[in-house]
Image (cartoon, rainbow, N blue to C red):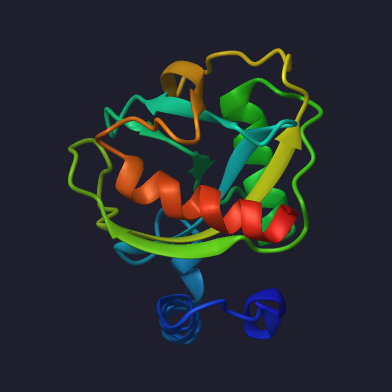
Length: 174
């Protein structure tokens, strides 16, 4: 977790989550895996169009809401960035998607929807990517839909989570 240790949080909340994630990983080295503790480390990605005025979101099958791409680690993932890249590629259908190597933000959230098994909370490390405005995305098995959303008209049920991530991505990429 050298990347997380070296990451410069951009506000007090991000710094608090950074410290909490590092402490959790010290106590629970298996937190990256689904069979680990109920609080899982996860990797995510926000995908923006080249004009930076739209964000590609997935209608998550388990959560039932529009969210960024992301999920749990797999044994072949050699880093958090690799896990975020794999998840974003799988869920968006953008096979050549390249994520910026810098962490965009951290997020910690309880899982309220049924269907997440023993996983009660995600400790998410998020990255960002920019793709052409006409990028050909596809719906995966984990999604009900994938669609572009204007950054100033996000889905109401998840805008409180997506808007700060978009702002963090724009700050990093701009």
